[in-house]
Structures are given as structure tokens and as C-alpha cells.
Length: 178
Image (cartoon, rainbow, N blue to C red; front, side):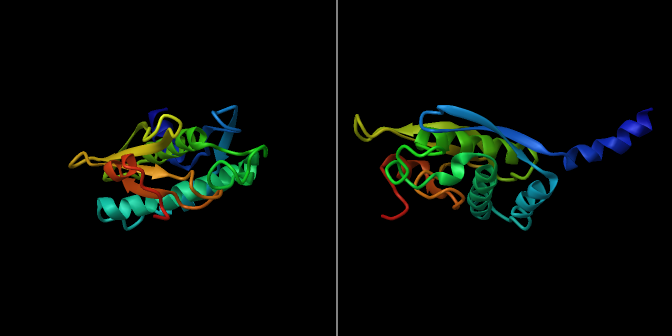
């Protein structure tokens, strides 16, 4: 019986996986998104050849875009436009709270599959440069020097790679277009 278990154990890596995402602002609607084995293989391949923390962050930003696109095939999040105004009132719209939740869920799936060599996933982070300008994003930390980085997909339409900033520059209000 033990030999059968040993034979089946590698198959667990080839199983579908799922995450819970949310949308319609402030996580108003929740949905399960399933990543099939082929999609997971494609996502995992983005991490092949990663040689340092910076190249891993590049792979992470691409993976988050790909995973959001897959989620958009299964949910109305394909309607999401960058920011909060281009898709106001549309089913599937996402604010920064939705994006930070979803990106963190995708990051935890990536971490669960062992594709991260140089980072660990942290809880989302908030910046509040003004009372009415609170913004959230997903966050990772380098495992060797504990430098923290933010992955922020809110700025872009669904399926685009996330922006990457150091936590310090993001806290100061950094945006991808200046």
C-alpha cells in the first residue's frame, strides 16, 4: 500500500488548484477560480531560469497578469479597467481592495507550488497619503535581506502584468506612469 501512495504523491503536483477571488468593489462578490494543470504548468514555466530576486519579481508580475486573465475567463472580472472610474458600475469591476486580495491569493498559490525561491508572501499593505486617498496592494518580502516590495495590478486593465515598487517608494505614492 505504501508503494501506491509513493506513486500517487507526484500526481498531486499535477492537479488543478483554485483560489477565492473577489470583485465589484470592497470584495462585494466572491468567486472560486480554478487553474487547470496546463495553466499551472504555463504559470510555473514563468519561473524557469529565475536567478535572483529582481528576475523573480519580473516573473511574479507576469504571473499575476496571466492569473488575472484566467480569472477573467471564469468571472466577469474580464470587464475590469485600470483605476476606479473607467468601469464604474460594470459587473466585474475591481477597486484596490479587490486587487490586493486577488493578487495575494495568486501569490499564495505561486508560493504553495514552490515557485518562489527568493521571496515570501506577506499580507496586503495600505498606504494613506491623504484621508480620502487610501490604497491597498499585495506585498512580498525578499527572504535574504527582508526588503519588501509591492505588486499593484489596480492601475491596469484585467490581465496586464502588475506594477512592482519597493515598499518605500510605493508608500510615497509611486505610480507606474510617473
